[in-house]
Image (tube, rainbow, N blue to C red; front, top):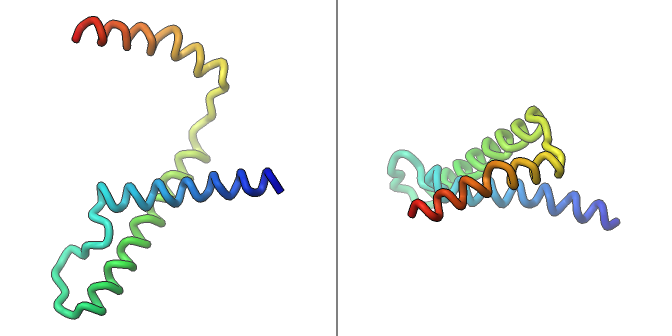
Length: 94
């Protein structure tokens, strides 16, 4: 049961991130043309938001499934050998 809740939380994270990204960067629910009928405009807006969010979910999952995962030791090596010295150099440069 704990693993299933953890797994569902991971999928919920994908949906939340795609919804926020759709709202902030892709215009959210606003249609590209003005619609005078308010009910139709709301329906088109919800549909556009869902299409944009589903497209972003597809892109996120596509990237997660095709790119290789890095191990924890590889990430720590990258951080300590490269990113931390670059961060200190930027800090002293500023």
